[in-house]
Image 1 (cartoon, rainbow, N blue to C red):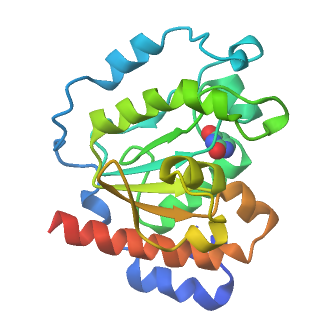
Image 2 (spheres, helix red, strand yellow; image 1 turned 120 degrees about the horizontal axis):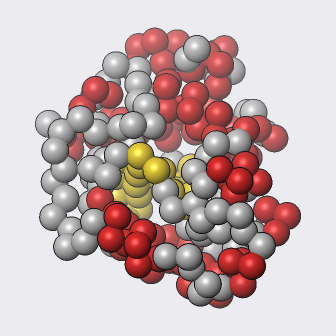
Image 3 (cartoon, rainbow, N blue to C red; image 1 turned 120 degrees about the vertical axis):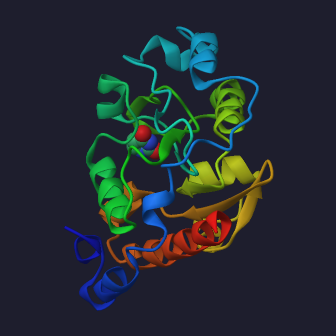
Length: 220
Ligand code: URA
Protein backbone atom coordinates (compact mmCIF):
# COMPACT_ATOMS: atom_id res chain seq x y z
CA UNK A 1 0.00 0.00 0.00
CA UNK A 2 1.26 3.54 -0.59
CA UNK A 3 0.83 6.63 -2.62
CA UNK A 4 0.57 4.58 -5.79
CA UNK A 5 -2.84 3.46 -4.50
CA UNK A 6 -4.18 6.94 -3.94
CA UNK A 7 -2.44 8.61 -6.84
CA UNK A 8 -2.25 8.27 -10.59
CA UNK A 9 0.91 6.27 -11.46
CA UNK A 10 2.74 9.33 -12.78
CA UNK A 11 3.05 10.81 -9.30
CA UNK A 12 3.60 7.61 -7.35
CA UNK A 13 7.36 8.17 -7.40
CA UNK A 14 6.95 11.26 -5.18
CA UNK A 15 5.92 9.05 -2.36
CA UNK A 16 8.96 6.79 -2.64
CA UNK A 17 11.25 9.80 -2.50
CA UNK A 18 9.44 11.75 0.15
CA UNK A 19 7.43 9.51 2.44
CA UNK A 20 10.09 9.29 5.17
CA UNK A 21 10.16 13.06 5.75
CA UNK A 22 9.63 14.01 9.38
CA UNK A 23 6.99 11.35 9.69
CA UNK A 24 8.15 9.59 12.88
CA UNK A 25 8.10 12.75 14.96
CA UNK A 26 4.65 14.07 14.34
CA UNK A 27 2.88 12.79 17.39
CA UNK A 28 5.59 11.06 19.32
CA UNK A 29 6.76 13.84 21.61
CA UNK A 30 5.07 15.14 24.72
CA UNK A 31 2.75 17.91 23.71
CA UNK A 32 3.63 21.54 23.51
CA UNK A 33 0.05 21.97 24.65
CA UNK A 34 -0.50 24.29 27.53
CA UNK A 35 -4.22 24.61 26.90
CA UNK A 36 -6.15 25.26 30.07
CA UNK A 37 -8.56 22.35 29.58
CA UNK A 38 -8.20 18.78 28.39
CA UNK A 39 -10.08 17.03 25.61
CA UNK A 40 -11.77 14.86 28.25
CA UNK A 41 -13.06 17.94 30.03
CA UNK A 42 -14.37 19.39 26.78
CA UNK A 43 -16.05 16.07 25.93
CA UNK A 44 -17.63 16.00 29.37
CA UNK A 45 -18.94 19.54 28.89
CA UNK A 46 -20.43 18.58 25.51
CA UNK A 47 -22.31 15.78 27.30
CA UNK A 48 -25.34 14.34 25.53
CA UNK A 49 -25.55 17.55 23.52
CA UNK A 50 -28.98 18.96 22.58
CA UNK A 51 -27.76 22.36 21.44
CA UNK A 52 -29.10 21.88 17.88
CA UNK A 53 -31.78 19.78 16.18
CA UNK A 54 -29.28 17.23 14.81
CA UNK A 55 -29.33 15.65 18.28
CA UNK A 56 -32.78 14.19 17.56
CA UNK A 57 -31.75 11.81 14.82
CA UNK A 58 -28.15 11.06 15.70
CA UNK A 59 -27.02 7.69 17.00
CA UNK A 60 -23.67 8.78 18.39
CA UNK A 61 -21.80 12.05 18.87
CA UNK A 62 -18.53 12.00 16.93
CA UNK A 63 -16.25 14.10 19.09
CA UNK A 64 -12.88 13.33 17.48
CA UNK A 65 -10.14 10.74 17.83
CA UNK A 66 -6.41 10.39 17.86
CA UNK A 67 -3.44 11.79 19.70
CA UNK A 68 -4.41 14.52 22.20
CA UNK A 69 -0.87 15.91 21.72
CA UNK A 70 -0.93 15.73 17.93
CA UNK A 71 1.12 18.21 15.99
CA UNK A 72 -1.13 17.75 12.99
CA UNK A 73 -4.93 17.88 13.13
CA UNK A 74 -7.33 17.07 10.28
CA UNK A 75 -10.75 18.72 10.37
CA UNK A 76 -13.53 17.24 8.25
CA UNK A 77 -17.11 18.29 7.75
CA UNK A 78 -19.48 16.15 9.81
CA UNK A 79 -20.12 12.48 10.53
CA UNK A 80 -21.67 10.29 7.84
CA UNK A 81 -23.66 7.09 8.33
CA UNK A 82 -20.82 4.87 9.54
CA UNK A 83 -19.39 7.53 11.82
CA UNK A 84 -22.84 8.13 13.32
CA UNK A 85 -23.17 4.42 14.07
CA UNK A 86 -19.66 3.94 15.46
CA UNK A 87 -19.01 7.31 17.12
CA UNK A 88 -15.60 7.80 15.47
CA UNK A 89 -14.56 10.14 12.64
CA UNK A 90 -13.78 8.95 9.15
CA UNK A 91 -14.50 5.25 9.56
CA UNK A 92 -16.45 4.85 6.29
CA UNK A 93 -15.20 4.71 2.73
CA UNK A 94 -13.82 8.26 2.79
CA UNK A 95 -12.03 7.34 6.00
CA UNK A 96 -10.30 4.42 4.32
CA UNK A 97 -8.98 6.80 1.71
CA UNK A 98 -7.88 9.20 4.47
CA UNK A 99 -6.00 6.28 6.05
CA UNK A 100 -4.19 5.70 2.75
CA UNK A 101 -3.29 9.38 2.52
CA UNK A 102 -1.92 9.24 6.09
CA UNK A 103 0.01 6.08 5.28
CA UNK A 104 1.54 7.73 2.22
CA UNK A 105 2.58 10.63 4.48
CA UNK A 106 4.24 8.12 6.79
CA UNK A 107 1.66 8.75 9.50
CA UNK A 108 -0.89 6.75 11.43
CA UNK A 109 -4.13 7.68 13.13
CA UNK A 110 -2.41 7.33 16.49
CA UNK A 111 -0.06 10.19 15.64
CA UNK A 112 -2.61 12.71 14.39
CA UNK A 113 -5.98 13.93 15.65
CA UNK A 114 -9.07 13.81 13.44
CA UNK A 115 -12.31 15.66 14.07
CA UNK A 116 -15.06 17.51 12.26
CA UNK A 117 -16.73 20.91 12.16
CA UNK A 118 -20.01 19.20 13.12
CA UNK A 119 -20.27 16.44 15.74
CA UNK A 120 -23.62 14.96 14.73
CA UNK A 121 -24.72 13.54 11.40
CA UNK A 122 -26.80 15.87 9.22
CA UNK A 123 -29.66 14.00 7.51
CA UNK A 124 -28.75 12.62 4.09
CA UNK A 125 -25.17 13.80 4.63
CA UNK A 126 -26.08 17.37 3.73
CA UNK A 127 -23.74 20.16 4.84
CA UNK A 128 -24.34 21.29 8.41
CA UNK A 129 -26.57 24.41 8.49
CA UNK A 130 -25.13 27.67 9.80
CA UNK A 131 -27.03 27.36 13.09
CA UNK A 132 -25.75 23.79 13.54
CA UNK A 133 -22.18 24.94 12.90
CA UNK A 134 -22.69 27.84 15.29
CA UNK A 135 -23.76 25.45 18.05
CA UNK A 136 -20.85 23.08 17.46
CA UNK A 137 -17.91 25.25 16.50
CA UNK A 138 -17.13 26.54 20.01
CA UNK A 139 -16.30 22.94 20.95
CA UNK A 140 -14.00 22.52 17.95
CA UNK A 141 -12.31 25.77 18.88
CA UNK A 142 -11.76 24.50 22.42
CA UNK A 143 -10.47 21.14 21.14
CA UNK A 144 -7.92 22.89 18.95
CA UNK A 145 -6.93 25.20 21.81
CA UNK A 146 -6.41 22.13 24.03
CA UNK A 147 -4.33 20.24 21.46
CA UNK A 148 -2.50 23.30 20.14
CA UNK A 149 -1.25 21.51 17.01
CA UNK A 150 1.51 22.96 14.88
CA UNK A 151 -0.58 22.61 11.73
CA UNK A 152 -4.15 22.05 10.63
CA UNK A 153 -5.54 20.45 7.49
CA UNK A 154 -9.09 21.43 6.50
CA UNK A 155 -10.66 18.58 4.54
CA UNK A 156 -13.09 19.93 1.99
CA UNK A 157 -15.14 22.99 1.29
CA UNK A 158 -17.33 23.00 4.39
CA UNK A 159 -14.39 22.69 6.77
CA UNK A 160 -12.17 25.21 4.97
CA UNK A 161 -14.91 27.79 4.43
CA UNK A 162 -16.17 27.48 7.99
CA UNK A 163 -12.78 27.71 9.68
CA UNK A 164 -11.56 30.50 7.43
CA UNK A 165 -14.84 32.43 7.22
CA UNK A 166 -14.16 32.60 3.50
CA UNK A 167 -16.60 31.55 0.77
CA UNK A 168 -13.89 31.16 -1.88
CA UNK A 169 -14.37 27.82 -3.68
CA UNK A 170 -12.26 24.96 -2.31
CA UNK A 171 -10.57 24.58 -5.70
CA UNK A 172 -9.02 28.02 -5.14
CA UNK A 173 -8.47 27.73 -1.38
CA UNK A 174 -6.63 24.41 -1.55
CA UNK A 175 -2.88 24.35 -1.68
CA UNK A 176 -2.43 27.76 -0.04
CA UNK A 177 -1.45 28.27 3.59
CA UNK A 178 -3.94 30.20 5.71
CA UNK A 179 -4.42 30.56 9.46
CA UNK A 180 -7.03 29.55 12.02
CA UNK A 181 -6.64 31.10 15.47
CA UNK A 182 -2.93 31.58 14.79
CA UNK A 183 -2.41 27.98 13.58
CA UNK A 184 -1.24 27.52 9.96
CA UNK A 185 -4.00 25.76 8.03
CA UNK A 186 -3.81 23.96 4.70
CA UNK A 187 -7.13 23.52 2.89
CA UNK A 188 -7.41 20.50 0.61
CA UNK A 189 -10.05 18.37 -1.05
CA UNK A 190 -12.24 16.10 1.06
CA UNK A 191 -11.54 12.36 0.67
CA UNK A 192 -15.21 11.81 -0.27
CA UNK A 193 -14.68 14.22 -3.17
CA UNK A 194 -11.63 12.19 -4.20
CA UNK A 195 -13.73 9.03 -4.31
CA UNK A 196 -15.88 10.74 -6.95
CA UNK A 197 -13.02 12.63 -8.63
CA UNK A 198 -9.85 10.52 -8.46
CA UNK A 199 -7.90 13.07 -10.49
CA UNK A 200 -7.96 15.36 -7.45
CA UNK A 201 -5.63 12.94 -5.62
CA UNK A 202 -2.66 14.45 -7.39
CA UNK A 203 -3.51 17.89 -5.97
CA UNK A 204 -4.11 16.50 -2.49
CA UNK A 205 -0.69 14.88 -2.59
CA UNK A 206 0.84 18.22 -3.58
CA UNK A 207 -0.92 19.80 -0.59
CA UNK A 208 0.19 17.04 1.78
CA UNK A 209 3.79 17.42 0.66
CA UNK A 210 3.57 21.07 1.70
CA UNK A 211 2.18 19.98 5.06
CA UNK A 212 5.00 17.48 5.64
CA UNK A 213 7.64 19.98 4.59
CA UNK A 214 6.25 22.59 6.98
CA UNK A 215 6.03 20.09 9.80
CA UNK A 216 9.66 19.24 9.23
CA UNK A 217 10.54 22.94 9.43
CA UNK A 218 8.48 23.55 12.56
CA UNK A 219 9.84 20.49 14.37
CA UNK A 220 13.46 21.22 13.49
N1 URA B 1 -16.85 12.93 6.28
C1 URA B 1 -16.46 13.87 7.17
O1 URA B 1 -16.33 15.04 6.86
N2 URA B 1 -16.23 13.46 8.41
C2 URA B 1 -16.32 12.21 8.81
O2 URA B 1 -16.06 11.93 9.98
C3 URA B 1 -16.71 11.25 7.86
C4 URA B 1 -16.97 11.63 6.59
